[in-house]
Length: 427
Ligand SMILES: *Cc1c(COP(=O)(O)O)cnc(C)c1O
Image 1 (cartoon, rainbow, N blue to C red):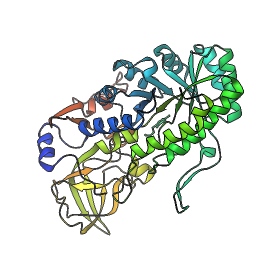
Image 2: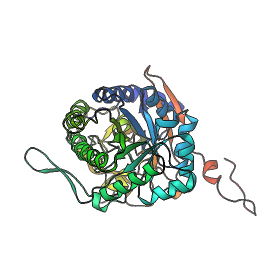
Image 3: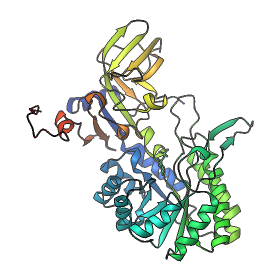
C-alpha cells in the first residue's frame, strides 16, 4: 500500500521553527485509533489487556496515551519499572518480562506488584530468595525447534528459530516450575511465549494461541494449577515496505477467538484472560524520524547526507531493515534518482537507504523516514559523540508538543569525571 506521511511539508516547517531537525514525531490520533481497533478485536475476551512493550518507545506522554486507551505496560528493567511508577502505572497493569534478571530489578517488580514472568526454571529459587513468590506468577515457554507458518500455497511465510533463542523454558521445566511455585504459595498462573518477531501474517497469533492453549490444558491437568492468563507477547509486525500486506487486527483477534472456543472452552477454561505485549504494532507506523538533507556527494554512487544518523534510528544499520522515505513536498514527483541516504557516523553501515529511487533531493529538503515510532529513538546511542534527538507529539488537534528535548553536549559530558584538571565545555 502507498505510504503517506502523517505530516505535510507545511506542518513540518512549522514545527522546525520551534524544534530543529532531526526529531522523532508521533501521531496521537493514529496511536489512539490503532489501540482502539486492537481492543475491539479482542473484546470477546473478558480480561483482555494489551501491555505495551515499553522498550519500543519509552516516553511518558506516549505511555499515558496508551494507558488512557486501557493498556498496561510490559517492562524488562529497573528503569523501565521506575518509568511506569512515575506515570502512575503499577500493580497488575505491569508485566515484567525480563531475562538474566538482576536482584534489584526483581525486587522492584515485586514491590510494584507487577505480573512477574519468569524466564527460567532457576528463577523459581531465585525469586524465592530475593523477594518471595507472589500470588500471581507467569512462566515463559520455549518449544524449541523451528517455528514455521505457511501460507495457502504452502510457501513458508514466517520462520523463526525458538531452538536458538535464549528465552523461556521447556514444557518439562514449565511443569516443574508451576509445581514448585504452587508449593511456595502461588495461586494464579500465567503462560507467555514470543516465537516470531515482526510477522506480517494474520496467522501468527492464532497459531501461537493454539500452541499455548494446548500447553495450558496439559499444564492444568498435570499440575492442577489455575491458569489465569495467557500472554501472546509481541511479534505482530508492520508493513515497512509499500508492497507488503498489512496485518488485519480484526481477523487476528477472530483467529485467536476460534482457537479459544476450540481448545480452552471445552476444558472448562473459558475464564482464561488473553494478554498481548505489542510494541512495534502499537507505535511503529505512528512515529517518523524527520531530518534535513545537509550534504550531497557524487563519487562512484550518489549520496545524500542527513543531519540524522544511525544513532537516531539504528534498525537499517543493525538489521539491514527497510524504512520507507518520503521527501516532504515532493510526494508527487517521479522517483527517478538513485541515492544512498546516509548519516554522518564514521561507519559505512550508517545508511538509512541504499540504492533507493527517490525524487531529486535538494539541499535543505525535509526527509521523512517512515515507521520509526517503535525501536527507533529508544535504540539510540552516543557513538561518535552524536546526541539523541528530540521527540515531538503531533496532537489530535494538529498542534505539536515537545515531549523530550534533544540531548545537549552537557548531557554527554555529565557522566565523565572532570574532578581533576579538565575544563568542561560551556554548553
Ligand atoms: C520486545 C518485546 C515485545 C514487543 O515486541 P514487538 O516486536 O515490538 O511487538 C514484547 N514482549 C517482550 C518480552 C519483548 O521483549
